[in-house]
Length: 399
Image (cartoon, rainbow, N blue to C red):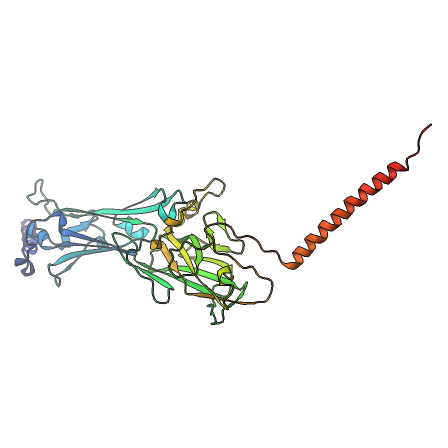
């Protein structure tokens, strides 16, 4: 008898909890559930979901009976009611990491697609799709129920390269803020210049410019980024203008092509990438005291376990990137780099190119050595011919 009374009281309690709250009485969302009731915010570290809570009460449920992917025994898979907003909503938030994906049973799939635009040189660009459902939990214990089933489906599709639309470079040109747009990553790319190979001491560029052949160490970092992805540099190049879209440029590295003075130390292995190059001057600045240029790096993301296979295959013929494909939507730009005329040794002067290699400039000692070798070779050949003819003339005649 006591058990029957307890069950009756429990059913009355649940019925009372599902009654329409005061905040929903005059709300326009005090109606039956609709597909448009859910809002999905695809962020970098978290996915935020919100559903109108009044339709939930209208269907005789409450916030304690709505859960992610039917994971009723996992507390972090339940939402939190926010009655301060108009209209009131039920909010869910879960981080984009392996534990959250597995605990709330969200579906996490990574797919490969053929690279286009900035990534036309690459046969694979990765995308990630995270999906799941918010469903109601029917409290009925009998064989039948009169409660409708509520099911909200959600998904976020993330291109694993940065997508920037209508975003301007900061005044210093040292960072590029990337805002969320239809599932693109919210993050901040920064490009930092260092003077040491440990990437600890920041490089200070004087007004008179750096010396030629000065080693410049570059770090491209992504802040506020989930640990599921690494930073990968596809291309870094320099122009004499801060605008990345330029017909005249010089590539430090792109795909399988790399400048002889450029060394990539870290790429696709962490949430930052490292490379170095030597300071040079543009030929068009030969009459200027200081040569000024800007460094641009096209950046994307990759999953740590598969970053290595996304690099281009340098053993086969590559597709050549067209100049018109160089878009600013995945590019981070450095502050102005100034290079003076002074140098501690013989230095190269680089010419701006249209994607073609730079011709080598030989120094005077190298030219002198080459001339000496050529002269000695001619003398040796002449002496060999002379001795051969002389020995033939002196050969005795046999009677």
